[in-house]
Image (cartoon, rainbow, N blue to C red; front, side, top):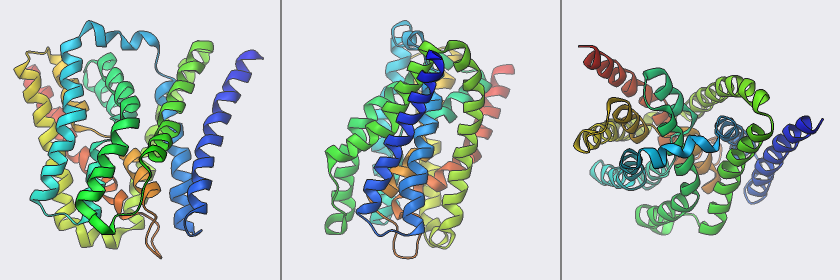
Length: 323
């Protein structure tokens, strides 16, 4: 009975917090179908995805930070420092519009998420190291994303930038990412056997939600996407390729082993598009008649493009290691 109570409490906390964020956001914007999806459905879906990440975590998973400090530091630097710099450079180099540039910066501040963990696992990478990256970056991004995005909006959009509260955005990130992850870890602590079963199902549901959200985002704003594809498509493609290359190059430079090198490359090049889509919508409401914020489009496109890049990359790495 106690175990059942812990599970119900954790899921209730996640649902109430994520739904409350959506309701508060909806009250400050026009109430239409697009806002309902952005402000209610996406936060709940994101909270569940982060919960599924947390339920697979245990304290011992963080031991790789101490066991492989060099590998962890390399990957963390790539994600937290180099990725935003590369995204900023691409935005200027391709002369993206203000909204698209800010959307790309939002994406660059997102953690890897469940997707990168699964890719590392099936490709033979260092799964514990991957999980450590995702967990730490998910926590740190609560601080870094609001600050970097706030500065990016001022730089790229100027007077057209919507007003955002750095603290309120940080709190939103905390409630949508940190709280679900910690709740999942609490469930694992008290319900280990149940958590093992839930993790398998949860990862499948989380992956399905990711695919549905990405394709729904693209389909809902397909015309707008086509109008910006000439610049947005190359931008997310170059970002993905460059970060994979940086991940691989930095791993070789610091002489990491094969598993660590693969993991650093994947974690450097794969971001959680669901977080980008959700945060983009919460920062700036969709335009009249639209169902998706312009700030969310780069993340939506990235969610598809990354598979077109990562699959050939993994095949190349696999052939290289067997030859």
